[in-house]
Length: 102
Image (cartoon, rainbow, N blue to C red; front, top):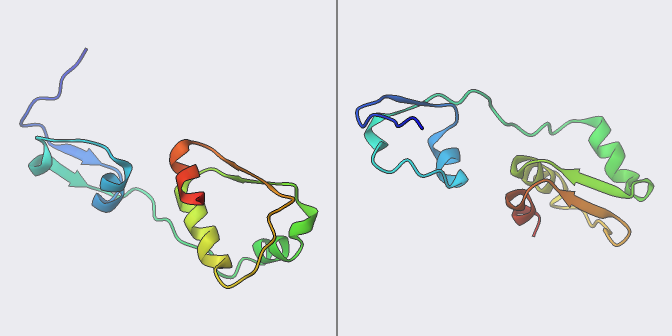
C-alpha cells in the first residue's frame, strides 16, 4: 500500500465546491490542494431533442439518470412544467444520484 507524504502537492480535477459536495475527505492536506476543474458542466437550454422528448414523454417508459448533474439540469429545465410520471420508471445510477431525484 502506498501512502501520501504529508507535504505532497495534490492536484484535484474538480472544483472545491464539487469536492466538498462529493464527501471526499482530504483532512490534513487542505493546504496542499491545487484545484483544476477538468470539465465544465452546463445545462443546454435550447436542446430541441430534450424538449421534443418532454413534449412526447408518454412515448417513454424509462428515464435513466447517470449523475447528480444530470438530475439538477433536468429539474432546472422542467421546473415550470407539470409532468405526469405515473407510467414512467426512473432509474438512477448510484445512491447519490438517486438522492437528487427525491
